[in-house]
Image (cartoon, rainbow, N blue to C red; front, side, top):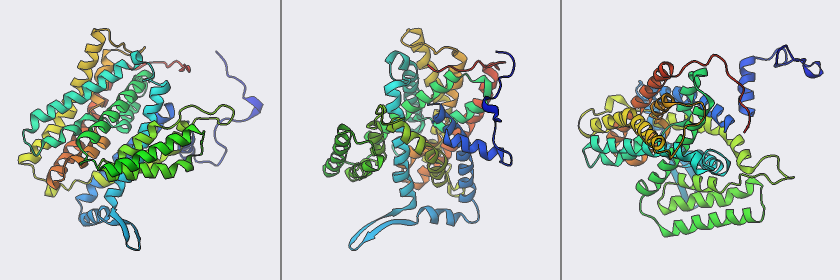
Length: 425
């Protein structure tokens, strides 16, 4: 359509006079509703980078003791003879990250209902790519670590950081078609699901049946509330806490509770009563907190690797090297080869507008492990030296993968001169 359209009602477009446009843009981002998810995750990538840099500088500065003291500070509750006290680092990794995984669970539930995973043929490519992107890096790690003490870290290079990966694609601008962003999000969600399964099976201690019983009661309460049509979110807090406590008492990492509850969240609106489903409402409410608070706090608490005390020999060097090679080489090889095999056998098909070059960029960007890799490292190693070596390997590999993603994106993806508006499907 040519020519300028008249403004309805004579109202001027844009913010009112006297407003600061950058703040208005941020406010609009936070208050708008899978497209909103992408915006949140991409924007939070810069904040994640900043938090990781601050943590590294802080942990290696003259006030490094204050960094350790902060995250080892005790928090909790004490009522008469009852006391539940843990470190602030534990609170971040076991409580706040349960909220992160709750959001992941909701996203998985939505994708299973009406998204990329709703039909298996549409979901085939990201599923195969994700499986290859988990199996090959894990195999690389096991082949390179060559030590029983280091083997426990095999799950570290399996995951993809959604925020950082989408942030890299956003920096490539018009070179990236929307379908590639959706494919990356689907792959990363499946990666998260795979990492969750790995955590539940391989990185949890022995199962206590009493904890399982408590968690089961909480889940049954949630199902019962759903069955009688309760849609008020606060009512679900108590059974949700019961599920979290039961999973924790069972010896399974409590973030699993977040996923379980997220998978039970209704994804359909109650016609005539709700304008949006509970899943959408919770996503819109929690995404700013997860993207702009929980994930940066997690990065700040876990990325502070003290390089002065890092041992670059023996098992530490093997762990770092295995992680770097597995994320930078194993991830792209796994994603690209598994995708190519699925396409060659006609098991899967590329989305419209995508080619083989897009898969290469996808594989390189998938090597950004960061958040989930740091999280698995925290569970894999109790030895501080090996944990520091693992964190260093994750940080190096993720930083290099970001740079390579930008380079490969500019070299392989053509700059689209014009963008046709996306239509809703």
